[in-house]
Length: 198
Image 1 (spheres, rainbow, N blue to C red):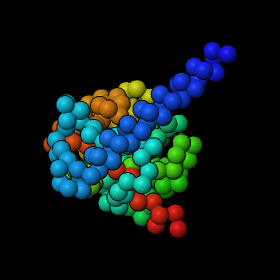
Image 2 (tube, one colour; image 1 turned 135 degrees about the horizontal axis):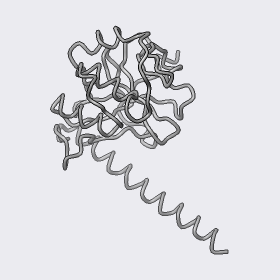
Image 3 (cartoon, rainbow, N blue to C red; image 1 turned 90 degrees about the vertical axis):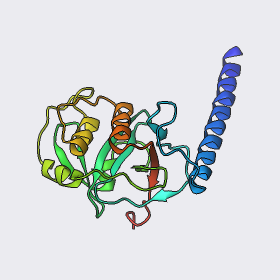
Image 4 (spheres, rainbow, N blue to C red; image 1 turned 120 degrees about the vertical axis):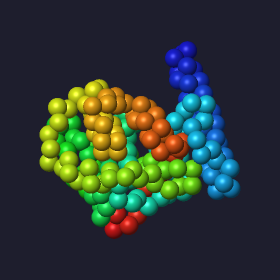
């Protein structure tokens, strides 16, 4: 009998926490609309607004060639790439191949149906100089893929910074590097998908 009560208690606590996170994100979006949202990282957190599968219906942003994109992998970790345009982006696949893929292929085998863009506090995608050229030049190259030391986040950072020797191990570290590079807090906004799915 105590086990079902524990499950119910956990569900209630989870629902309360989720509602609290939704309210915080909605307030942040209202602040962005009013021009009051922080431009720079808050409390040493580079990622001001994380990508969220639970925050549907917020402002969506159109990708621009060179945009930094991400999606969830089984709701646990993030996968990143660079937007090329025309329903195409560049990613480092787990096989080690850098490849150009469609949105559908980027999301295949991963959870959710949403892609997020790294944006500033004004919902503008963050684009680094020459990132598009570097990403296009990397297509069909092989890298010694390693989940921790040579992954999609390191690939994206190498396209942005051209300093491939820097090991960017995870999504949070990538956000820290992006915040430093752009001198901006990082807001992950939903990408407009409707036109791509037609």
